[in-house]
Length: 186
View (cartoon, helix red, strand yellow):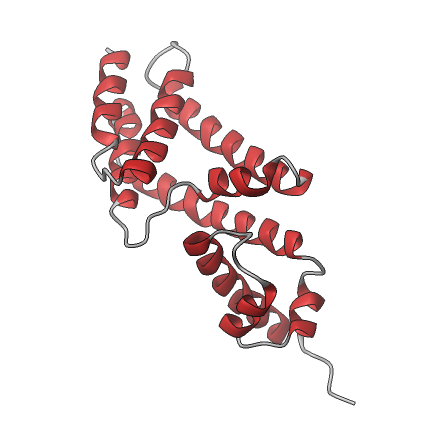
């Protein structure tokens, strides 16, 4: 009988699995990646994978949650380096442009997940909505420090830049969005 797996080993396995699954899902799409491909990339048996995440949907949700924390933390750290409230709002678009130039940029992982599975998976839909709500709430907080005007146009400009960069490959898609936001904030 094998020795029980320690909590430390479970945490390490979980991180390895999430790293492998996130890379594969983002590069190839969720539905295109089978569990055997994830198993091979993670270097662990399916039994261990299913012990950590009983269904592929659970794994997708975990990947999205972890990516959300990392993505929004990076955005917040970048934007909040600026002291000026207007510059903070505009810095969102500078950060987006940096993201768009990263190797392998394939757009918004949450939009991609929704496009593949959102209408068929309440759990994935909930994660997508939670991410978008948190992203828009953060933008709204930065906008509120500048103006009493609604934040929705700024959110839409950010979302539009993300989708445009993914579809067209234009890594400068955040520039016209930023210019429009600058005009809105005057």
